[in-house]
Amino acid sequence: MEYNKDYDTILEEMKDEVDADISKGEGSILHFALAPAAAEFEELYNDLEVADENSSPLSCDKEHLIVFGTNDNIPIKQATAAVWLATFNTDIEIGERFECGDMTYTSTAKIDTGKYYLECETNGVEGNIKPDDELLPIEFITEDFEGELTELVQEATDEEDTEVYRERYLQEKQNNNSMAGNRTAYKKMIKALPGVAAVKMVRVTETRKRINAYILSSSYGKPINEVVSAVQQVIDPIGQQGDGAGAAPWFHVVDIYPVEETTINISAKFTLSDDVTFENILEDLKATVDGYFVELNKTWEDEPKLVVRTLRVAERMGAVTGVVDVQELLLNGTDDNITLGQYAIPTRGEIENVN
Image (cartoon, helix red, strand yellow):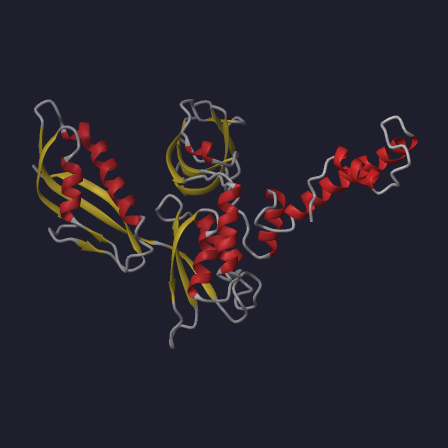
């Protein structure tokens, strides 16, 4: 049906239906009688055009696309909050609020004495940037209080772009993603949840009747407990497992686990430039090893087992400014490559100069 009719077109079409011997000019009685109806019809055509566009996920606006996705269990990826590891010179209360620059944070979990997770109260990627200002409590704690954001442990994400979401929705709808209970359906559902970059599924066996899913965080590391719990709640809530209370079908019992971590300690004989000490470049060495591990972790989902290669570690560290040569490199005390478990990723341990 043709909807793009404007007022003038509609008015002329209405006049054309009237006998030719009747006056139809702008000042005529007929013109004034038909003009209000033409204006109403123009609005009606506009409304019909919008309704027609919004009747299909191919052309609808964001609001209606979200409705389509919600009904088909393919929700839009919401903006998420960054989680930082913070260190303090005193213990604090869970729920304590802090400010740093333009950002505010809430403590969510105690990791160790003086170490806590702080969740940014502003969702979106701007929370991934560490402000230059001092971390201060919103309410008084102690006179000599000191605190610092030390490590981004869970990257924030912005809300999924509308057209990216549309493409994903149509693809998953075509693939009948609505949790048929197969491996592909589980992986797509779990990877669509906030904080998850990759997943490996473990099939049911004769001796183990539960489905296990190991997840990798959106930062390509081990996800924090809150992310694991949130995924568990969506897929198969604790206390209702197997009842179909989540996305998993009836009689499917699904357990969500964080990816396992294998610590890799590195030792080598480093030859350095004359004006460089090992302590001067240690942070750069750590950063380059971390970068290599992140690259490895991005392949975790598609690889049976990750392999940390001595040659790659030596190449990366040898490229650090101030390093002349790297010899006798050992990973966890051996000069062999380290093959990790099926559900494990590497995490950096100590880096030692054995000169």
